[in-house]
Image (cartoon, rainbow, N blue to C red):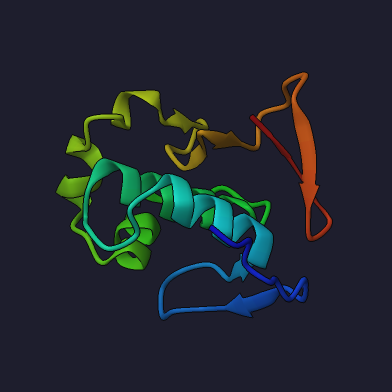
Length: 115
């Protein structure tokens, strides 16, 4: 299979009630390859969370549900939801990708992220 040609220019989008989501073409290709972005499954929710967290700010369950086109119950009951990291205000800090510092770090569009 041929490698996709990627435009490295990030694109920022915002939906009503959700934080801005920066779409880095390289990151999008990785997430779309690893996670099914066409179904409201735990992996789609996780992929959406990663895209939102890449903006460098915590997100709420409601913001994640809205961005993924899912219900809050879908997020809370996703099989992998036990792996979600929360702050003291119950905002999502991490799910695969985290804002909590770890030894494994990288930068996306100027935001320090960890895994």
